Length: 249
Image 1 (cartoon, rainbow, N blue to C red):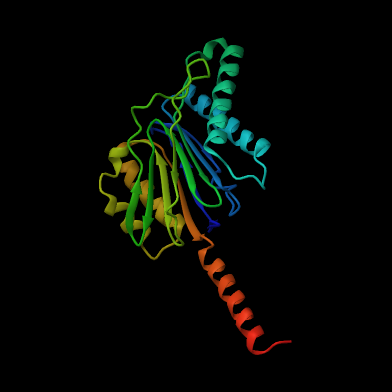
Image 2 (image 1 turned 120 degrees about the horizontal axis):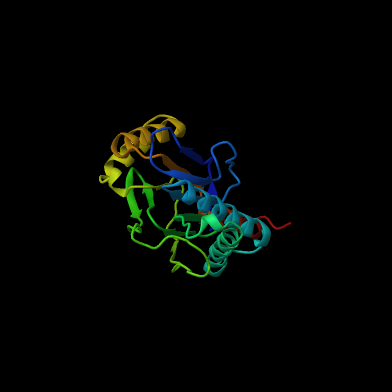
């Protein structure tokens, strides 16, 4: 299987009067079809905003520095990237005495060639939508301890999803899970005949009205999984073989 993506979309705003400060990667201004790594770090203070920035930057740096394009990613690699984020957070706290005990949540999502990996620490919501129905939803991780440094390492739980099909959509946001208690609300908006930017904006408006917190999310549509192309290759090989029998050169 070879998972390919359509253009993904991100949204993240910290507005005056709203509670919550987020770091998101990639941002709505830099997101591109080649992106395979998606991160949201959610916080509730200036300190957690800084912690999220450090962890988010460290993880993407680790991926860009050590992931070989010819190498398929492993859960061990993902865990090492998170540990690198913890190390970076510890280093910052040692250099800034007034920033002790800062922490952040983390939602990390990565598309490998044949599956999807994700890891959650703190409040985040991940759902996979197919034919306007949620076929997978992540567990509530809001009670998990936040990332606070390598001296207090978090338990890293990595989930692998192999059931991925063309036209699936993955919707990821960090924040209060109670904002969308009904899956049909998200599915209904994502099935509307509007642009994905409009869909995310509509979801954001509903979230803000219910929580008064800032909203950060990724919407990632699947283009193809490669199954069809391999079937065509096999069919072409069979036709070539059959023709060679009846029409030898």
